[in-house]
Length: 278
Image (tube, rainbow, N blue to C red; front, side, top):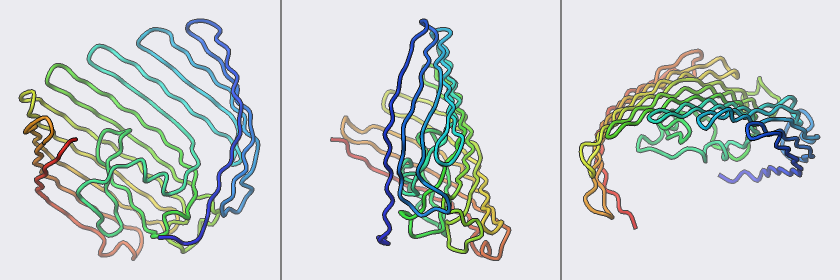
């Protein structure tokens, strides 16, 4: 939907790094940004961050930075650890995004859209999550996304497993937390995803997954819970063709306002898919 609203983001920055040793790297970033979007406060400002990268051994890496942008203090951190069969990652970041940029990170699933709930696959979480959007003007909204994610992965021979958690806080940059326009207020989401997989043969694999997510909307005090469980069988028919059979269970329950009445649903589906690879 083209609403005629244009958001502009302009940033120029310089980065200087110094490697103190094989284990330590320090860096400083300075710059300036000039943005144009609807906001109750200034969208221009200076940028500065200071940070370090620490690699104590070949299995562990710690990356951290702290600084200032037009919206205030900002930080980012990433901790990763790997062993032969397992890996762990913990990540925190602050990002200014449009709603379109946020949703472009997700890959749509076959569940489609139910009562303004968009179900999609989060590549960073390795699983499907539910995201609620209650506005048709996706291009208009600009928000600060603060995210904290963790993932634990295990893989050995034909078996694999993953457990991941996420916490997302979307702070609307329009500055009108009491607005009645859909999508113009803050939102907090958190939950977990888990999946296990087993390779029956080089061409056939089984996968089971589950996820739980809680969403809270500051605009009207509404909240909802999204639950998903599923299992799938995947088989490569040839080098260019694949077959997928999947059972999926979705459930949404919410409360807080009269707007939530009639939006709860439960869905059970069986899908058969045929894919072609060129």
